[in-house]
Image 1 (cartoon, rainbow, N blue to C red):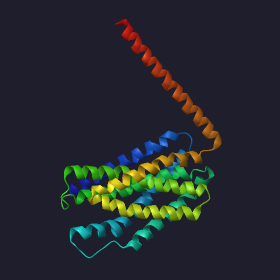
Image 2 (cartoon, rainbow, N blue to C red):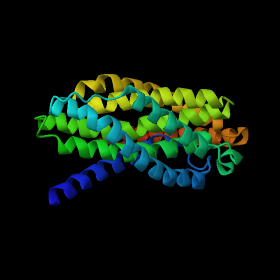
Image 3 (cartoon, helix red, strand yellow):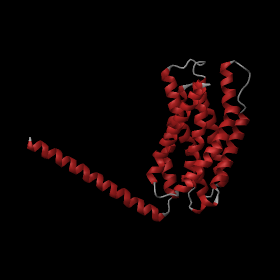
Image 4 (cartoon, one colour):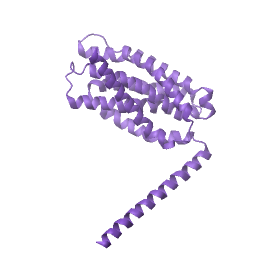
Length: 263
């Protein structure tokens, strides 16, 4: 019982770290220029959705997948289950991003990011716990275990945030059905690759590059959701920060030159 509780604690901490890194990477850059209370509201809904969605993934995908390797059973992952779960999750995200509170501020993109981080955090908690639980059965060495846990904690919330944020971006452009279908496709890929990454670190060779490519695009999605007046203010703030950094660098160089001349 104590060991189970310890594994749960480790999985929870790792998942929270991943969610924090995902928030700091994108949301803090545009802090003050999006509806923060609505974003936090979507974190709450994401925790609820992620708990249900993660449990369904555990029962329909992760458990059958691991069973194929643990006891050589004939049980296999049903592709139809993956498709159904991907579509249901995308429809749920779509309904949450269609609320008046979200549409009023055109915050589908940022709300989608916050929602996805929470959903991905809950799923990563389950996957990390399961990875730690079967670590001895699969004879993971310490390096493989650290890589797997770190990869899931960092990239699982971020991938789900990217999918949900892209969903919101497409909604802003009026592509409702396209948003559901495309996010369903990427969620199916998510449910295939991350269980594979739980037992084979080589999966990160495919997951990491795709995540980094789409992370660069996420700034464009969020930028497009900011009103024109907010964009002007944000450009002024960034320009002021750049000038201050340049002035600080010049002062540092002058102080170094004065120290050298005094010597």
